[in-house]
Length: 333
Image (tube, rainbow, N blue to C red; front, side, top):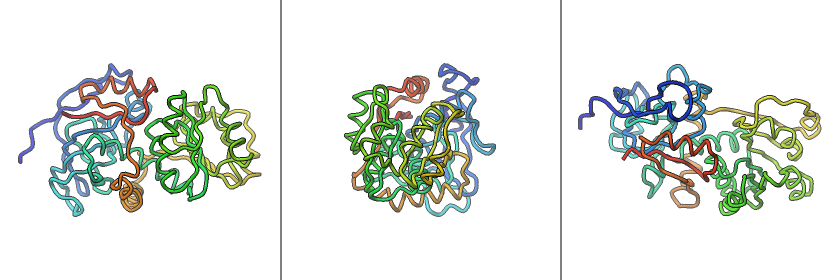
């Protein structure tokens, strides 16, 4: 079937608030070698999209400037050299950009099938968070069965994914969240203790819960504001994985002695600048180790709200307000 001559997309008139976004029309992108064109049925909304909207997270030079880092839909064109996918396949993918649109080009190596029984909205909630958690918690921090992990922002899209994955792979999970209701959501997902950071000191709670031993891994999206207490909360040979800086990027007057005395490892990464080969390796690990769990229904994305493409601004306001639990998704229909 012939494609239309143009597509709807979320246009960013200038860097700024959600009101800077509106729906416009543009040409449909063409897949290059190693890429596929997806007719987008749903797209995930993530904090990096908010940062890009504000001008604080520019896309890589070869990526689409259109917002959106994860999509789900139907393969409609295949670029040269792609053999793993066929026209008509239902896929979800980690995009390098361009997700807030009716059509999106994605690398074939960043693409996964819909898990069994999934629709596009549910599938679109997977790639960004599952790639991020697997890369940082399991590949870089090396979380093992029987170890313990503290997950900050436990009810974010990242947090709800991390709690479920860590639990599924046999770790003891602690999580922080900003209300009693959010803490209960963390417990429901598998955390053995949820810490309300508004009225509890997470470092004191972790010390009490672990007999002052600390946890083996911390997944942190706060940054500077939590750095000192994160070091305090790690066990010997513990690993701190930093993926965002919601609490600032500069740390002052923090003792680095625990890093030496407890042989700690402090790592950090962002997903978007990783090479295509690195992202393909993460995809392959997810397909082997995680997708069977999704197929079996042992874990699933938590979806808080679904907005039509024309209401992308409302979706951004919701994610900035921070009261959601899980993912926010845009639907094309």
